[in-house]
Length: 356
Image 1 (cartoon, one colour):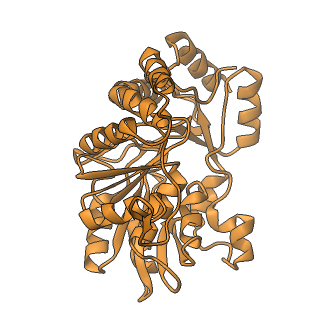
Image 2 (cartoon, helix red, strand yellow):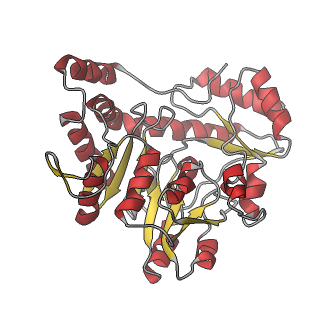
């Protein structure tokens, strides 16, 4: 079976981790500090704060902005559920905005329609590696005095008008095992605002002002040096790994010609980094069963819009509030696009897809 995802772990990652293990200093230390510095420099921001995963990054960003009870946060309806759940954890209300069907990312026009006097922030999701319409979203947020949070969990290194995603608003990244770069589990928050950075550092470390002096209610959400050591090595090769993903996607774009499939489209003036290569197909179950029978791995990202998840139905979100995400969720199928794919595997996948 050609897997849907496979991390690229090489000698530098192994050597870095062995060095940490031999040092005896396994908790947060110099490796995490270097990873934060390197990552901030890569994204083009002043500060980066490491944490345990991408979900924690979203939670911390909202807390650092003092989002709380009575507030509303507009969020894309088509994403992994943690994007919206992070809002619930603040006792705030997620307000779902529909997506642009062509790009799978949040529709700025629907964001604008959903703003109320209670709205405090917008979370946009650069889904599958595709940058959102950041120009439009930034203008909306500036006009209405709203915070912009970028969920960059699937878009490390993606570009919008030559700027890295995660540098326009507050960036939230995940380093889960299947991402474009990985630390196994891990996350990062990026910002140019010193006061937000300082609050983030308190929140990840028990609210500690100095040793055993605690000024605010905080958590233990610190990244370990084992993860930091992995991150330092992975970041060095991120651009080359993304280039391989892009090359694989371009091959699919050129040679997949099955008329029953809709191929992904890249927004103008952006660089899509293809965390996933997502096709749309009406007869999805049949297509997936066929590919799996031919040893081609598949996945569905995602089988339901968030507002139709059982949790959100219990919270009385009415069906049909986001018709595009509802329709798209019934048709999407991801096929392998990861950097490990060989030329023969790419050819085989294309031939198999075209024969269906």
